[in-house]
Image (cartoon, rainbow, N blue to C red; front, side):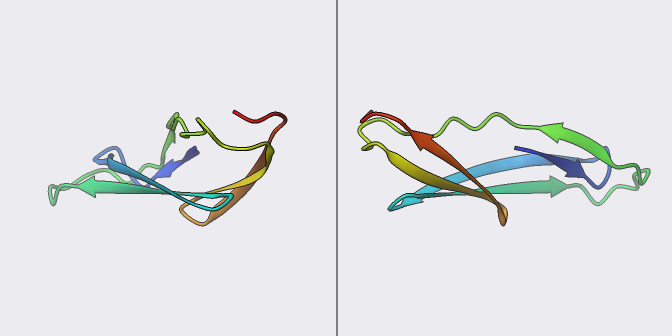
Length: 77
């Protein structure tokens, strides 16, 4: 997942993952202290392994905080 944090004081605090059928839902939560902080957008990239073990071949959707993409498993995993 790639995106931008609103400032250097905001950090990723938790990554939640659930699967419903052929859809993976990822929620990236952030935390920011109440201390003053310069307002500069900070890009981030977070590698989130998906648990595809045992899934049948097919097309799957990944939704990360509302942004969707698809991928194909060519063979049963």
